[in-house]
Length: 392
Length: 128
Image (cartoon, rainbow over all chains, first blue to last red):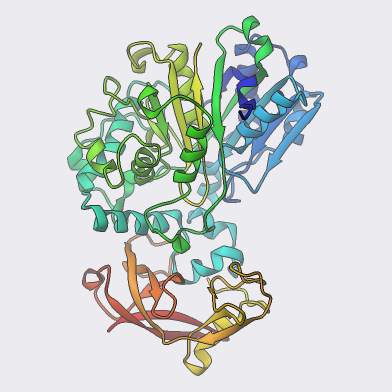
């Protein structure tokens, strides 16, 4: 029997800075707010922290990860036994690394954080994030996309969604439910970026960005920071509200770009799901609340399928009408608004919200009936990762 | 934005010079590989040669882009993923041109047409 080492780790503290469009503050300033919030929330002090992990994610876009572990260490004068930041990573890699560091004894209490200043960065240079990242000539994988004026993930995911619509007969009215559900939940979340009501008519008449994806299918750059403390399970009994890591996975199997996948509606989420479920006895039916990555609405649909909540091609029908994924539904999804309405925090906001729900601290947006098992997924294209969190 | 030419990708971006699309192929096992790389992912041979292909392809999926990513970009336009006739596992992201965006459909047959920009020839596609 494989030892599921991630069960040696708990998420012991949660922190978040102000989240907003163009806050006019530095990434480090925001990160410090979130980190100190998380450390205090864990009932710890700065001197207890001996590890730091962050990640810059899939794209080196301006403002996507402006704060290094070194800068945070220097600002807070931390003394670190272990630290890690990986540019070549999934959105969840920092949490995965921190979990392993704690489980292996490299560190006792690791701060995992992600700061973003993408809204402020965008103000200076309004263009697609990928295009900004490589002005001049296109190199690496971007050379196969940018020369054809397909520089943005919305183009690549638009093509995946178009193929999905073609194969499975999905409709925009179904896809819309991911966006509408997020907005309804954000209205109940005081620090969400987009809280004003969104109707089906507004969705259907919104500006098209890259068919079939309209404005409301795309998340939006924000400024903000999220942090959490990952601690060894041995100290869990001393902690206020530990959230246990049941299983976590971030495999890397498939081709590196959207266009070379053998199946153009099937991506790395399926691999992450297979790994995740192989490391636990829990099943999809045991999940009480799901935070499924919605950098684009379409990604949540394929995550529902990849994770086994419904069959292949059934994701659109699963969300139809919105009831099943609503707060009182059979699978409450993206309960603080998701990235579409809470804000683009590159997966970290979703992990944070899963913990809030398991603590029963969701206030007006709290999922009823005392949720015990939460699923979080990040990414969903060529990179994908997932974590199953439980309260004991 | 144009591609930066390197020793490994020049054959592809300059293929339009003689009007023949070229894809890297393994001399040992016949595997087609794209994007080009230094080793055959199937048999690990290093003997790889750019081979001409017909330029006939099928639209696997497409999107009509409405967002002007730069000030001089005319929208809407069609971005498509096409699979090549000889090697359907090889996909190219490209533009389908010379037709109205609403006339483009998944499954359409297309053929390559090169658009020259200095020493780069972009392989674009038209419906046949």
